[in-house]
Amino acid sequence: MRVVVLDAWAVLALLRGERLAVEVVGYYVNQAASQATRLLVNVVNLGEVLYRLIQVEGTPLARRHIARFRAGPVEVVPAREPLVMAAAELKAAHPLSYADAFAVATARLERASLLTGDPEILALPKSVVRTRRIERRDRG
Image 1 (cartoon, rainbow, N blue to C red):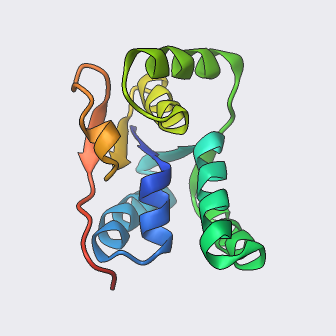
Image 2: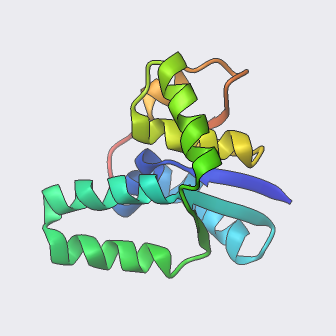
Image 3: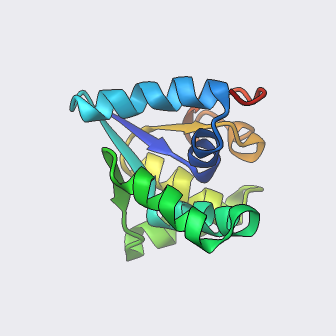
């Protein structure tokens, strides 16, 4: 079964209604709903989505967005010790945020592709992580 990891960038773009993210991420959500794909997001990245939504939309609306997202077929990956250590090593070796290192580490440990539009992640060598690029365009 194909495994795909979403980073915070992908989830935020989806929740903001960015057209290309809705198309691409929506495709994988449908694949996960039909059990053709395992779609994952790390809990650290989900926390990043929540705090960014709170900053822009306020806590009540941000919580509703997260609840709606969590009701879908995306599996939330916990931050257990092996994943935390892998993320720390990635952060030490590459110029990316610590939260992004969790998305990359999750993809590596799950032997998955990482769905993102984040330039820091997309700049990583293919030997570090396989990515599926989401282009950033206007909304809706």
